[in-house]
Length: 182
Image: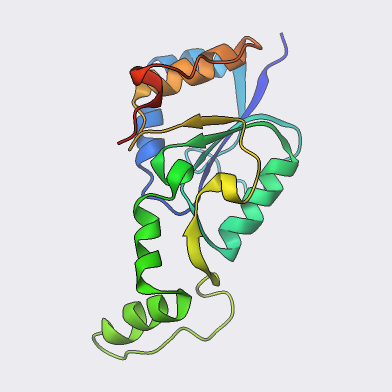
């Protein structure tokens, strides 16, 4: 049996979707029989996104250049990309910073106005990934194959989305149980 090459990615979000993924409990053991986890912030220490990924759950919005680069790379190397949770689907809570009017005002608010000891902007390259002017949902950057809303999606919804893919089938993403936001 050829196993599905499976990945998860965490962009600008809270990791709640990954916590819900872990709430699948015993089913994760069954998942391991059908899928090789080739990249994930949960239990993997790989630095580079691999090639030839079959399915990838992408949690979080696109908020900075690092998120943007990883999203483009994973799309190039993944057959089925799943927008995983409300932040990936709509940009949700991370997009609240869009109301502040661009990356400069966000950095000034975070590092100068709220800085308590030595307020200063980070000016060394690589300390803070360069922010995009606005936070955007995943589908505004790359084509997405499946949308799985929820904040976070329940373990049952995650399983119902992944399980058919392991059998080479498409999940039924209809009905309140599968498409409810929040």
